[in-house]
Amino acid sequence: MYLFEVRKGLEMAMTPLPIAEVIRSLLKDLEQRIAFKNREELYQDLARRLSAVAGRKEVWSSTYVINALNPKFESRVGKPFVRAANILAATLDGLPLQIAQAKSVTVFALGSVKENSLITGSSIPCKNPTCTVWFVPNVWNRRECYVCKPVKRRAED
Ligand SMILES: [Zn+2]
Image 1 (cartoon, rainbow, N blue to C red):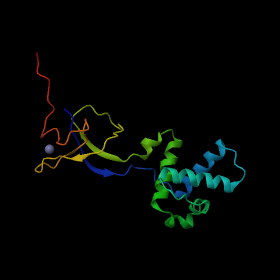
Image 2 (cartoon, protein in one colour):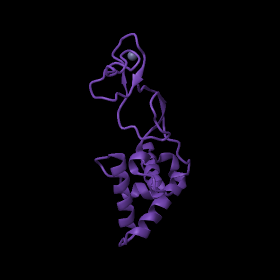
Image 3 (cartoon, rainbow, N blue to C red):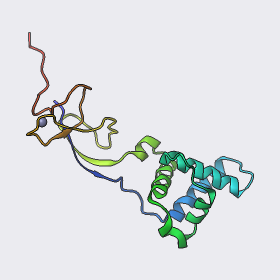
Image 4 (cartoon, helix red, strand yellow):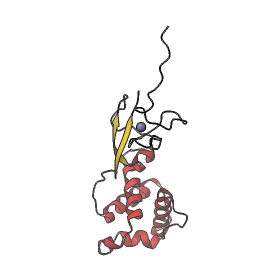
């Protein structure tokens, strides 16, 4: 029997580096891997990559990247940009993008769930109105938690 109760979402603890430093390391990495014609092309490339990570339709401008490099503008850099930059920076250390994008949450597992597992399903509330448990179903049609509706075991022969 598996029971996962996702209690509260905690944002993944990221190294609290100033955004300018994160952007500098991303630019340095790109420069080492790709031959850009000039700085503008480099900034545009990073802006496109960050926009893709953030899932934005409208791409951030290269000016936004340049401003993020200036510590004076740190307070004006938006949270989605900072988050995207930290996700992309985490991939430089070899962390897969999906894991870097995942939120870290506290989970109570009755099954064998390894530390730092990537859980791809979403938690749903138990259909039983008197129950307060949220759980990640193991099959698509499960609507009640594993306490209200235990997993049926095959009759033993
Ligand atoms: Zn329940």
